[in-house]
Length: 515
Image (cartoon, rainbow, N blue to C red):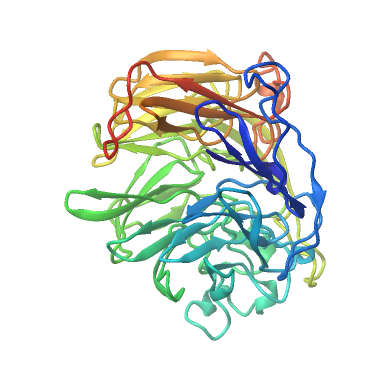
């Protein structure tokens, strides 16, 4: 098992025992851990310490065990593991030893560039989208494709339409250096049948139109982009919310499902609207609004977006927004089950009183940012005293099959299995297993700290396991939701850990779906 950690650390673990095989730290040479004779004794912690020897930075960049922040995923291809760093590098390490194969610097971190999502590997290309594009600078956010063998950059595609190019006029007369946003802080998806990669982009910066200086659509922000993985050419785009103006991201996972004979792409942003797009043509198919947001209306047949009266921010005017800028939906990914034809969605129900502040007196390179917002959270009127919700939604009709609500926010991605189960976890340290058809909680446990991240299931030597990461940070609700909303929920202790549970009986044979 390969495990990404904060600060760019990657670990290789024995997936049956949890023993550490090797650990990579940026700028450090991997050294094997000192194991105790008994791997289950207290002498070895869940994340063992080990000695490290500083090494010279490899050609192409890197160097220094610097803080490299969030890493939401890694990619595996051949005998290599690929990751990204908070100082804008893409790295390849040997899957057997953890030794660096190559390290490519993609952008200048001093300008704010960074990675918070890992890459995917498609047809020998390592593809990743960058973030850190809030500040004004001479260039913009981009997706890049690198040769998996050498780390050499093959192509780079901007997520901001440049002046004089198609879509460039949607920014009005703003020069390129003042066109900010379009970050890609979640990884993309690939369809081998269409030979396209699909990526979501965040909103324009600053958030409010009145502050950023244009009320145009601001392509290609708040969009789904479909790119040729070999060349980076944009085959189509779909902009979900033209000129988005309240920090309601549409940058999350793209799930590829065929529904009613239509090769579809599904995604949901902070507003809790499930979008269905034809992934061959990029045409709108349908949208389903959960009905919790009060900011805008989407025509379910045409996809046309209309802001509700008074909901476009003006400087100094308070808005009562549902959701808050934290969103109902965030990085906590949905999961799909073909058995129920349903999407399983972790949500957090919250609203805020938001007052957007003025921008800088003048636009200057190096400034910019998201813009100032004075905010005060409050409970969603339709949620009673609950902050968290986990629901199953039929993808063909948008019908809610079942929902479970909790006092605590949901804090993990969803996981579905072929055995008819769904898994998720919350901020208050719970991990749940549900009957995917009915929503009944079949099993639950309490972790030492908050469940957080992306649970997985896997099999080793005929035994099936479910793994749940835990820890605080990287977008936890400790920093996004005011604690006074539910003062009865204690803030969990810190510390990162991985909790692995075995399912009874034997796992399915090779080639069949996990149970």
